[in-house]
Image (cartoon, rainbow, N blue to C red):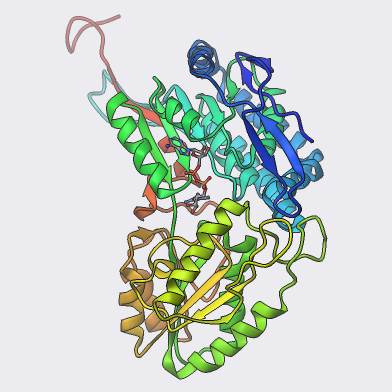
Length: 479
Ligand code: NAD
């Protein structure tokens, strides 16, 4: 059992002890933590403390802010196992994957620790006697509302970028992964002045209060529906929304590729983290010539994956985050079957404790099914056979989301056509995951607004000011 506490104005345990929310281990239903849901007064106190601390933190030299982030990264490195175990306990991910999330978080913190101090404006060329420049300044108070599916890596990026650019942060981690959020906040707070980081716990109600509060940025990584309500709240307050939201990423399998290799890529994309990744493969378009072999290999791969508790080092597929989420996944699968999809493997809620769901392959899917159109966020690979590469691209492009897409092809012409035509932020050719560090894209449509990653995130979290200075008395004036 973890004893999660809030942090307001440099004081841990702010507010009365409460156990409004309960988190269960999705592998065995054991109690992981009980936590308070922040009250309206606590939200107001956190906003006030952040505002008070903002001036001092903004005027702290950027190099000192970067050095603080490096110290947080050191602490995270030495607490890696604790953070990994917490993720596995509260959201079920296999322990190796959880360690990878911590490692990614450390790397991101170190990148922002280095990039922050060299993030700058520029000098302009005006009249020779004038000084003209563009300066970047912190935006002020950032509310960071984060999800549960990769809680350490995502939060390190957002918090690191916001803090190193001189903003104060009110951090509200997901109510499904509060322990990771709390442990992480303790590491940050150890190297920050009081009030620079606050931690509030709770669910949608607390998030909505923060989104409607007098903050300067609401940075939300989470579902599209939540992102839309946050954007609406920001219209009323004038805060800037920064939204990294859901996806329904397509995978296109061209003819001519090795169908067994393509199936391995598909399984990796659809089943890693039990499909609970924003860039998980959510729908597959396969060319008829390779479809039969591809489907057989995908079923073989799905059935070979070892499903079990995340804390077992041999586990490849852990449970879903909780039973509420499992019901959503299963409901989409059942609806697809009712509309004519064929279950080739999986597709059935198993007996026993926890929130397990088997890797599932569905054939004969159609565009209208919610498994193809919406984000399923579960280990489900729905497949639709197509007759041409053009048809595959056109169906892949037809989506309310626009996060990323993968194309498996041996044709450079098709690769070029795909990256130019697909209306998404990221296109990957012949590799479902991967890419160079520092990549940042604009998500399209329901997938969000603004750069959520890379050096460009520093631009999002700062405001640029144009400055023009001349001496008093006109062009010949002196100081
Ligand atoms: P979510 O939107 O339900 O929750 C995210 C955060 O928002 C939580 O802290 C939550 O308490 C808060 N929240 C919920 N309702 C709110 C409201 N009405 N107002 C303000 N805040 C509110 O998302 P989730 O279920 O935690 O996360 C899964 C989603 O996150 C998936 O859709 C996934 O694709 C997305 N995601 C996107 C990225 C990306 O980079 N694009 C990365 C990771 C996850």
